[in-house]
Image 1 (cartoon, rainbow, N blue to C red):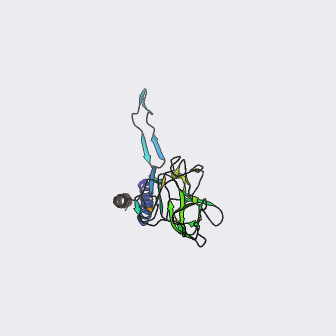
Image 2 (cartoon, one colour; image 1 turned 90 degrees about the vertical axis):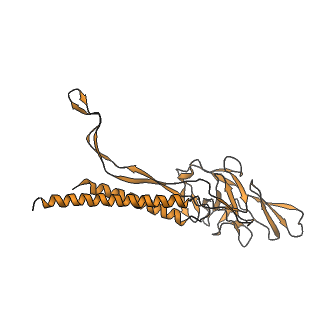
Image 3 (cartoon, rainbow, N blue to C red; image 1 turned 30 degrees about the vertical axis):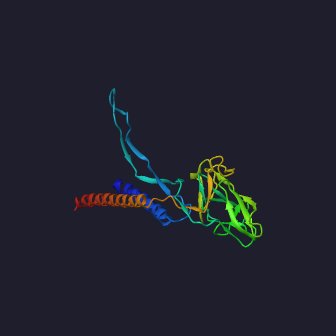
Length: 263
């Protein structure tokens, strides 16, 4: 059997994965804090019919080898944590992170997750939560009598209460965390990431310190997906897939020609 059939199949599978990843990037082009995925390729094992430097004749070495590759595969999809565009929403509870930090989120089961989505809201008792209702950690509570909320670049949350409009009182402190290897985080959906052994231990700091970045009130960070780049990549993946199918057809034609020899 011609090896090209199986080699081309690995290329088709790899390009199909690229298209799946690109489709996910494009689907999340308007998702707050979304970070695009980038496919990384590897070539597969080689069949060594002759190694480079092998003895070609007595006292002579072959300058090149004879190695037949077995195709390609997607080795991984790397999350790219470049900064997305900041959009002014004029909502005092919206915050964006200008830097490498993440907000901490506490799930109902007590586990901790991390997010770049700063669309914060208030629950029934005045706690800052995500749009899914998960508590921000450390917990920040806005008094019911508050008429204004101010969030400083260092994460300090202050309020102005009704009846004391000339007095600002502290309501809490937002903190950020960063990771030695953000690309090692596990994407969990709902704009949440989970810590893994590859990401390293989270480093907690006041916004503006330890490289976590600063907080901007009234802004939202959009995804870092560049639509034009993704569409170009989609076209390239489609063409690469077509080239691999052509290689399959060529190998099939060779097999057909061989089978006709014995007729």
